[in-house]
Image 1 (cartoon, rainbow, N blue to C red):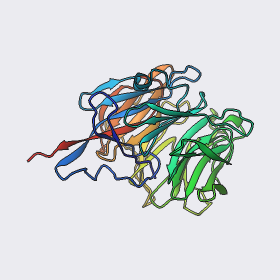
Image 2: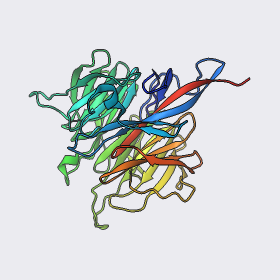
Image 3: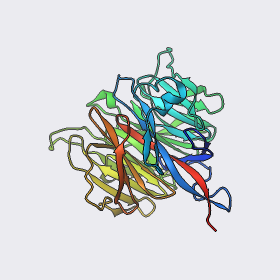
Image 4: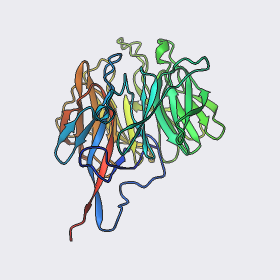
Length: 378
């Protein structure tokens, strides 16, 4: 499932008693935005945070906040809260309980911040058996633990109370995105640093034993995996980036059933997200100037639409992430470009552009929604 986390927050300016949520990449048992706090109030989307990866080796990762009511963006809110920079190459941010976890790849830390204040709680430094730093890539969670892929081939298990890594398990080469549901964890093993000899496996980890149960073979260079409500896995493989059509292995969406090792192709895709069992995806092959947005029904296992964007909007740059606001159904597309600030495109559920703006940082990697409550009118 896509992640769906809630927080009571008072982190920025006048945002008091607000909630955070993202319909993004894992399931958790906390209430959703359709469950109001009191009978006399209703919830609305007040704004959202944006994580900007920045340029590699430039130490310019940052977090911005966008106020939907005032249509105003505030940059570098982590720096404002902590008096220091976030680090180099933040890959994403993930919410669980009262904390937000940020894997900062080149800084070799997992930054843990308080969801109410954005204050740093701890900078976790993953180490290998020889005491060398490890580069975290992505985060997910289940039960009492948060899990992080480490690009040297391991997944780390983090106790959410002590914020200590208590165990690591070896998976495949250069594991990237991961997804947990119940007692099962999936990791996409890209082998990205071993081009052209990419990995082509998804490791299936039993979280009760924290051991790899099996590896599912997929198309080369898998980088993303998400799960639907039934525990079926959906995988993006990026292929080989060849510029020669004769040798190109394209970006491809595949899936396999829970408990199965038989992966089947669905369509071409580069980025995916899931909300309420609807997959939102975009296909933009590396180096291409064209792209296709689509929606796919994971339960019915059929395409909903191969033309999600229904107006004449033209996206400039490379789509990095897709997020869906479960309260409004609006779709947020984070877009990056070389050496220029990223853009956020907001589409209605009908696929029409609502807004576009600068994210105040390079290569935005997704959002966390912020909800507030207002009195119902008599």
